[in-house]
Image (cartoon, rainbow, N blue to C red; front, side, top):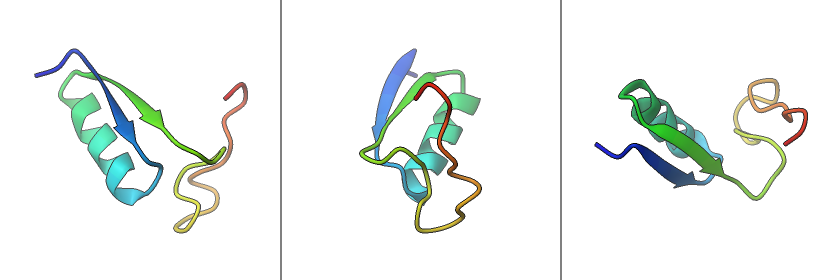
Length: 52
């Protein structure tokens, strides 16, 4: 199992993958083009993070 990894994307599959790896103990970085996650799914779930 990797200690750290990067997941490319901000959609549902990328977020689910990041959550799964994180729950297994990996440190995960999400690489996204936009300033928010899940922009096509749930607007409040992907609100912009301060300092992002």
